[in-house]
Length: 198
Image (cartoon, rainbow, N blue to C red; front, side, top):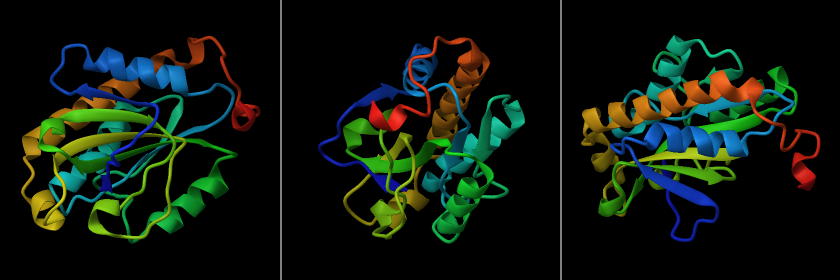
């Protein structure tokens, strides 16, 4: 569970109930994922908390979809969470050569932002909402704003509507499936080799 900052750069937000949300999310991801290397999707969270299950739900849905181009870490059965994050990041780095990482996590925000799905360049900070000091992860990040932040975060996460979390996770998984189908056919804009210098 990360926490949305007040001053974010290069961030786009979409309401999960919008009829266009899958097209919007997939378009954002296709524009930002470079060609030429391995892509890892790191779905962060835990199935022990309704609000924080957003990431593992996305991961489980993606596993069921059997993606062809992307590697998925973090599911309901094998979550990627605070207790194993450093170990799993090390595993990802060992198994994949210079991977481009899409980090997915739930977050808390303003009441007016609940239900928004955020796509942002750069990493997210898992556990920030719970005051945990964990390594940042992701070349780009997707955050689902599942509830209100600022007070009693643990209680808020435990009392987040499961319906909302599942619906948001479904939209993200569907958008990533669109990207997976299109990924090998899109024009090359950047390569992994020159990504850091662009």
